Amino acid sequence: MIIDLIQEQRAGLHLKQTLPGEKGLPLLGHSLDFLYRPVETALRFEGKHGPVFWLSIFGMTAVVLVGPEANKLVLLDRDKAFSNSKGWDFFIGQFFKRGIMLLDFDEHKFHRGIMQAAFKKQALMQYVDRMNPVVEYDLGSWSYSKVRKNFKVVPAIKQLTLDIATEVFMGEKLGPEADDINQAFVDCVLAGTALIRYPVPGGRWSRGLKARKKLEQFFGSRVAERRRNPGPDLFSQLCLAEDENGQRFTDGDVVNHMIFLMMAAHDTSTLTMSAMFYYLAKNPEWQQKLRDESRAFGKDKVSYEDLDQLTGIEKVMKEALRLIPPVHGIPRRTVKDVEFNGHTIPAGTFTIISPFVTHHMEQHWPNAERFDPERFNAEARKEQHPYQFIPFGGGAHKCIGLHFAELQIKTIMHQILLNYRWEVPANYTMPINFTTLPNPADGLPVKLIRL
Image (cartoon, rainbow, N blue to C red; front, side, top):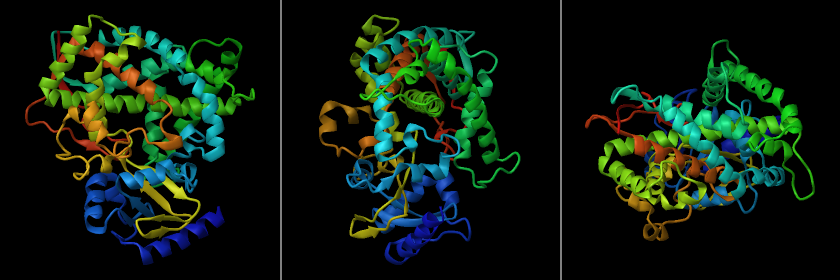
């Protein structure tokens, strides 16, 4: 730890002497910009300093790398120079410790190899079949009348995706503890961007630590039973999964992975569908186009084999992920010197790339603020840099659940489109809260009309 701190201090001194950058406010640096105006700030800095620059956040010197080539360097990481663990640990290590995203190199490869069994085609097919009844049941409660004004999209979608995650991932329905478990996930995510990173009573950090203990107890109490009586759920799959050498996860590994995967499975999908709701409300012609596609399909519910045919939903999903990716910054820490754009980034440097920033760069996405799902038709994609669209990361750490997320979103949106239409006022602009994962600050109120 002391060696890492010394290395970090030396790296920070080197960066300030050799790279362009700005100190920002006394003590705070650019922490407030990072929390409240991250995209605007990074694009302004990129325009002024180029694709690599330093700034001060949370009491440390960080290097921001901007653009597709920077994304490729960090995510592909051919030289194993960028540590996931030492990057994410600062933000969420205390709350999602040893989740798959927080492991490095050979250890990450070992854990991912075991987990992959839970995301193979046969497992995904079962997940879709188990999702459909949950979606149908939850959607039935969305509207008690033909028209419901000020329907809050975010909590409704979040409840639905949590219900799916507990059914598909855990194989059980949560009883009275459902709200507590959901709040525990929220508290863990919020704690990652706490300005005061000590367990001050009532603060984000303190709430996050308590929430982590609650989640550990919740999942830990169920591992032994899952090993004895496994089902088709992901929890059981993790308890039974093994690599080619017959090695399995420890109980602690299973708990760590379940906490991280449950968060990822319902939080990021909630944010993606909320963005889709917003842009489909602002662009009703696209909403109707998707509805027509689903109606022409001739099925109330889709099976796994049907999903590839929902091409309209897929394009809208990708454009929503471009405009509002659910993870706006990807942190790493260098474990060896790295060369980029004529600069040396020394070992021990905290680095950040940003899907959100890259997705809003005019040189890569003309009229970047405009909603245009046709950016993702087959012809347009041929012209794009492979690392200019990175909502799921890339390289060895590319999101292991990306296919699950896509099938979940398509399964849900198909049923929503067949049952509901929604609107927002013409002058409405959705405010985005960046102090956690990017989310609608007002819960996204819409006028919901049952069809």
